[in-house]
Amino acid sequence: MWTSAYTQHETAILGFLRRRLPREDAEDLCQETFARAVAAGDALRDESRARAYLFRIAHNLMVSHLRRRGLVRIASDLGEGIDLEHLAESADPAGPEEQRHWNALIGRLQELLARLPADQRRVFQEGVLKRRAYAELAAETGWSIAKIKVDVYRARRELIAGLRDWRPAGAPRVRGTQEVE
Image 1 (cartoon, rainbow, N blue to C red):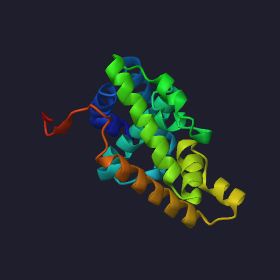
Image 2: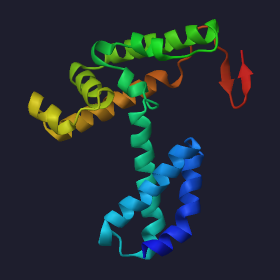
Image 3: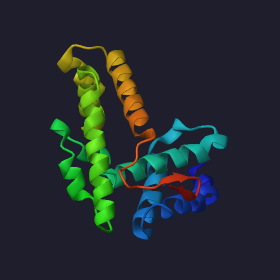
């Protein structure tokens, strides 16, 4: 089964990965995708679902690869004590205007995080920003995993709402593709 799946889907999987990664990394992850599918054995008996199964494996491998290489870093750089200064240092703005906007964004995130209720702020920082397991947080705090999930959801909702209409001072409002003053 996997030989025919490789023949049918290898080009699509490789194309998916090459649009997101350097050539060598994409080729390695494409091979790893099929190796994992074969190693899973009879985990997938329905050939009509092979494509979706393979794309899911490829996507997960790509995300793991990017995290390992430090290319997906915004969340992990927002660490303990709301240390967003490290995030500002890791940014590579093109000029002083972009640096001001970046610093303004970090300041806004600090404000929004400080406004969250203590429980929400804690689980968001630990569970999302530091990527700690919810079960670990539940054991540490004595809270249920359901409470942690609800608090994370509410914190995300508040942060998104707080950034929705925000823009740094001096930045033009953008609607569609046209700037509006």
